[in-house]
Picture 1 (cartoon, helix red, strand yellow):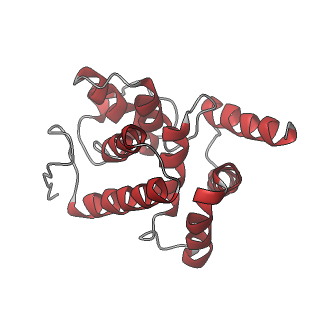
Picture 2 (cartoon, one colour; picture 1 turned 30 degrees about the vertical axis):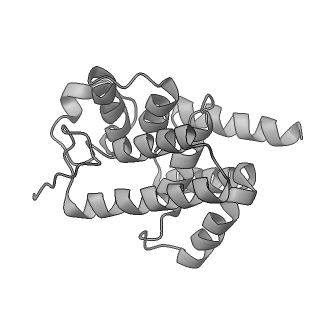
Picture 3 (tube, rainbow, N blue to C red; picture 1 turned 90 degrees about the vertical axis):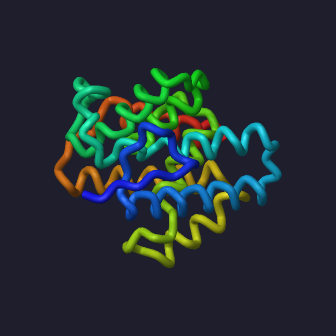
Length: 185
């Protein structure tokens, strides 16, 4: 496997050229949203830190070291591994760490960083499925982040169910928080 380095990635990242291209597309989408939403620069930097960390150990051999007890299938261990490594390397922003840790499964306690990463990771234009639908959601996100988040969560959770994987406690809590939030509006 060919690994790349990039100054935007942490030095410990283990990514392929294809993974780097994915992260670049996620970063571009999150950056576009930040501009359209007039997000303050400090918050935009938080969003982008989470983006550049989220798949840093996706293909790496370090999963066993950084996330040996992460729940769920091995495909979901890269978020907890990247968050643990980032924390060990000095990342202290709990919102950024939670965004990275739970970006594949959802988390009820997320601030906007987690919500942006969860949606941008799913909606980035390089993914090969339902491109037109996902592009429409991506355009709508800045004006309706809560609505788009709920739609993305429903689609991602439906995929997990169709795949026959168990829903993790974090995912169930995340979904319930979205449903409770929309019911109280």
